[in-house]
Length: 274
Picture: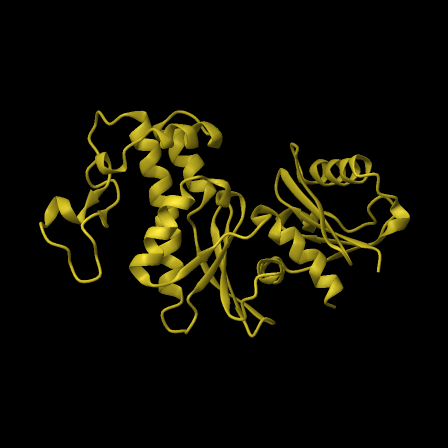
């Protein structure tokens, strides 16, 4: 088998990854003003930078919201489309050693995809909270939508100055809730809160809401393993927030290698797995 290229085409960002008999090859991300420019730019840069011949590529598989604009060969190579939720499931399950899991795809919003028995994949819902929420609130409250700037600000912030915690309203832990558990996001924020504290509150609210939502989505199942994929997995706050929820709710959150490329990987796997 030659190389299969998986491409996740967003509105202005394209993620591309190759898969062959040796495994994952050369993940790459390219940004442009529109999905077509992003797609062709990403593919051209990918094969050029990695010295890949078009003859070495068996198939190009597309997924993502921007892939709907593409219905023709890519540099002479035929393309096929695959469902984004299927790609999420295949990509998150790859090399995970898990049979049953819920994929938490953290993009502009967040989708939940259940994988059972390692092969039965179904979209079970989602929430309209994600990276778009962070950008929108940052524009309103911090006057910036630069996600990297917001993350750096948040690292200097103190969440106790923004969120109302159990210890602020009760002097003893409640059943299943430690004293530092959140009672109300932004419930303690004052009008003169620092920009750093506000940034910490925004990111904490989004990541915590995502984690608690998938835990609730799994209540009527036996699944306790949640695989996080998407750009938000790169936020350093993930390493602080999700372990706390693991301990509180007796579950496991996993961030796999190449987490932000797992949808593109799943597109490629949709072809190799037939």
